[in-house]
Length: 97
Image (cartoon, rainbow, N blue to C red):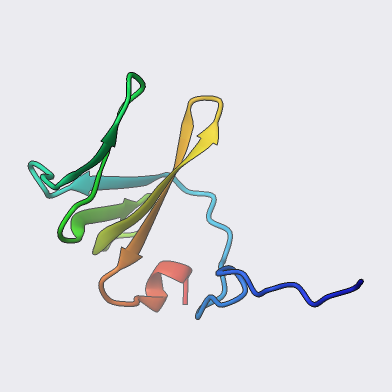
């Protein structure tokens, strides 16, 4: 009955996560995002983007502006969303190293 659990994507992460207690700002560089529609309902529409969505990331207290790609947006409940950005180049200084 005790079967091993399948590894999740969290277990497969390449780099450890570090808590961040600072405000983060992202600026979308894509003026428009156009892609083929997948489905639509009275509640909304789902479509795919044919390319990455470039963003600029600013973190309070960090002098550098970092380029990245939007990789995920998920509903967190209570009117909030979680936004994941992949940096184009790893930068240890963002972690305080």
